Length: 634
Image 1 (tube, rainbow, N blue to C red):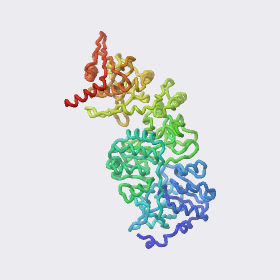
Image 2 (image 1 turned 30 degrees about the horizontal axis):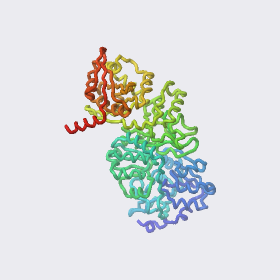
Image 3 (image 1 turned 120 degrees about the vertical axis):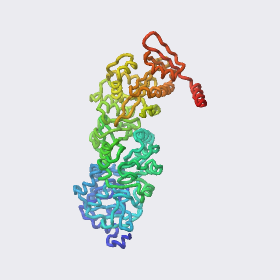
Image 4 (image 1 turned 60 degrees about the horizontal axis):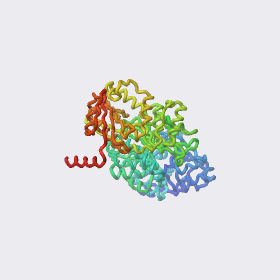
């Protein structure tokens, strides 16, 4: 449709359209990369418009004018989110931040809680039926357009035609301003790539095949998405689409086949990125854009099974409170979509949330895991909302955990140089036991190489990883789940209690080199429980004393036979030449495992109730030769 022929009276210049705006008007401007730049520039240059209030979600073009005193006299800026380009102005008090959940902003317009006189938006040229597209910005733009008394649209041929709730008929628009220009491009700056990559690695461990994901904007989300390339059949229900999604779509990692809400479609609200992204989305039915009151509604989000929300933060305190929108008293970003998606994911069947955050800020001088949030910091995400927190040092699971457990989980993923200080403050506040040992101050990334997963003959999957200080309660529950006979076979007496003091003794000796403990975990509902543990400890003579405990319902499934070579490999790395074990005579199952692995072991029967088994490791050359011989025989 040619709008000049269909509605010639509506086609005007920007100056003519903007001359219709009265002093004191409340003006809405389309979001982010979809903002009508030509209309904004013309409005600012028009001295007739005075005392206007501007509402916008993400603002880019106006950042060029906020240092102009004349501009600030004429316009009051009220932003629902503070973009990077607007941050300095926010710190200086030149704009007014409007805290709100994204899901609720459209209703603020429709209910007239925030009345709008004018909406300035950008659209594509109309199709032959007279329908334009809002392109890359639907979020709150749809509601702004629907509830403003007058709508002025910049018709930009470079605006991609997107599918969803983004179609606007020419009859809904009062004035058209044809003007072609490149869309705003916004690509996140690459910061510490190593930190981002390590966080992405840990997050990828939590994302299972077939999950539906939500993820935010920035260099960290980009790094996380790049670590999901080995996943299968992911779905997307998110606020913003970025360039980082394209490789996942092109390589069919994202298929949306297993989504329970709108399968086959990427559901989003806006997109921010490069011209390449805009062309990728143009007339692409894979993308289904809806307004924020749909995309961000927690009850809608929850209709996606296995919905994983991945967002970031500025600070997390030791109790699990999260700050996202301010640095102390300085407003930094906004509430945005985090709370909507955290609550939606918690209601999703099989869903959960992840807060991904670098462990430090200001070039390592400040910890982001803090004893308490900074004075003035906003708490949009409460203690009860948080499930997982991930830094470059690991994963902390907070849901269902006490303050004591949260402190230990978060301290062990803080930067090593801040861990002891965090523990000391927690002791003073009586969050934890006065004798609590701090987590190791080493970078334990090497422990990732000690993780494994095995499917047992009974069909259950068991995951193995090193024991951590935060496992105390899980280890305690494991002990009390064991039968008296199993405890006796491990400890040689009928141990009745597994006290905090005993747990401290266990962890005080674990340095992950000379002393190591590997636990086996199985999934039970929404959490994991320990069903096995294998331990070695330096005996001072070049060998390590080794011991195992397996819960009765997992005995006879080859658990110890998997753990033993795993512990051997670690022990070899750390210079040990063999294992030694003390086994009760009646524990024939354990003796069988040792003899099978080490047929040349030395057995010292002695005269008591126990037997000492000395097991020297094969030299590497012999081990390789034996392996080759076995392969040839097969």
